[in-house]
Image (cartoon, rainbow, N blue to C red; front, side, top):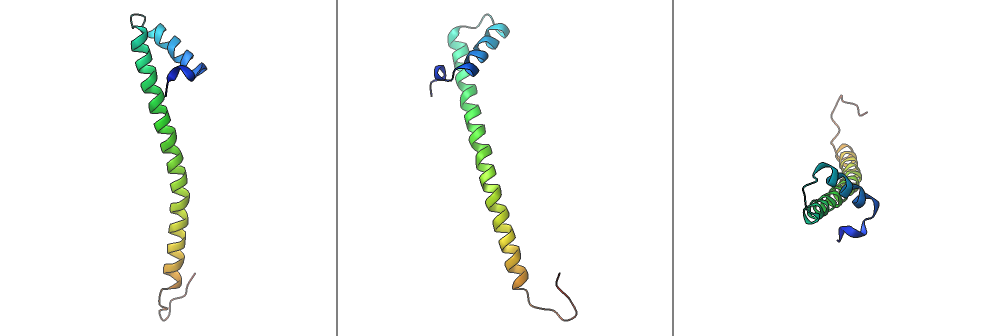
Length: 81
């Protein structure tokens, strides 16, 4: 991924870095921006994975609970909910 193609977020990051670190070279700013964009992409993918897994986990837990309740032997004097 080449961060020059990102557009406005990249320009904004470059301006902020120029203001905060005026002594940095363009190469230093480019390296920080590239690392930042890679990190952002990893976090976004991780959040998506968690969201997808969460739905599947809830389905699996609900299914396994339903099965364990329906397969439980009936005990004398205990009623089911």
